[in-house]
Length: 431
Image 1: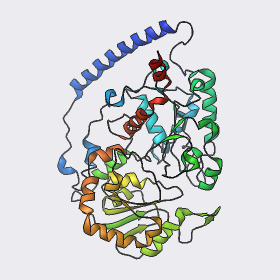
Image 2 (image 1 turned 180 degrees about the vertical axis):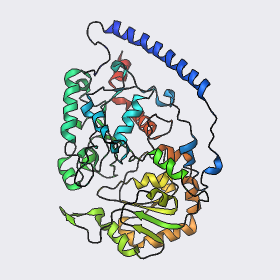
Image 3 (image 1 turned 30 degrees about the vertical axis):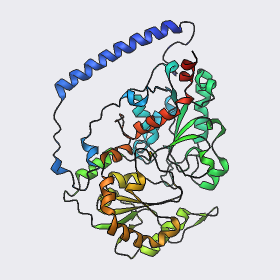
Image 4 (image 1 turned 45 degrees about the vertical axis):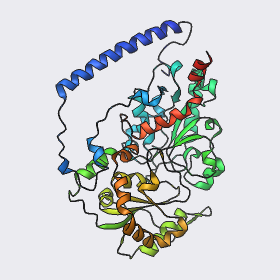
């Protein structure tokens, strides 16, 4: 197994010299390759602006911005070492294509982006942080097709035992400079039901590490008892591109308020809790026959085309407060209507959520029609104008290669605020 790319014994200085020499040779070779490829293969962008729907000004960035590497200078010289774990921890799971594209796939996308990133270092002694690539969301149930994460704790624990026994970096910091992804309902608590997640809490072996998780609330919660960064759920940029390419160029939004998803007429009592805290049930009962509302309970593979036709897209909580609809609404130009009390939304420094969305308290969901009519009559155009800023869409989407300002870049930028955890920088400052 190759967790480390050079000898860390008595020949370390010679190894580091060879490593740095190799790095310069590699840099020169790659630079020449990409420069030659550009000269021979570069073609001007042939996408006509007339093919992009008028309503998708924000989404136009998905098609037109170049996928260039970010600038190290803007990330304070950040360096991340990516562990080369055995394939059973990550790549073996990719045999199921869903692993790359479902709403929890940020664990895969971030790993791919870091492997291709210029913040990656092959020398762990100069790393600020260490990324541990363990995919725990790709074990899909044969019963209902949903990700089953009962194995998550044992798989991550196994990976930690491996890296801590083979190398010294985990042990010297107790994992405080190590990064994991927990992209499921209740993040690093690793359970889909909140009462069980809260009772179990964050595993002891992760409590000193940095967790990239979709779960986030603005109040005290057991599933936030570790240093964490709230990230968006994964939405495939390619699926959005295809939706835009197939859309009506006239851009008519003929749906006032849209929601497609699980809505129970008679919600089941599960351990004293009800799905969506009955919010979705109230929406269905109150507005199911309201012609202003386009509500559907069944899956439809082309539902993104319905988002493109909608002015307001409802984003109510499910079991957890976050939803992939938050991202899809924004990148497809539909005003997200957030119904999830206390939710902590991702990347607030890059995404001005209060200016591009409508927030409705759970207790006020029965007044939803009146609230949205009031927004439509007053400041809808202002909200839409801000929503269509291409930088906002970019900040919520992950790519295989990091684009400056995209979701992986936002993660890296957030990590620059946690450099006090870097053992490497602390050592350099003390010398």
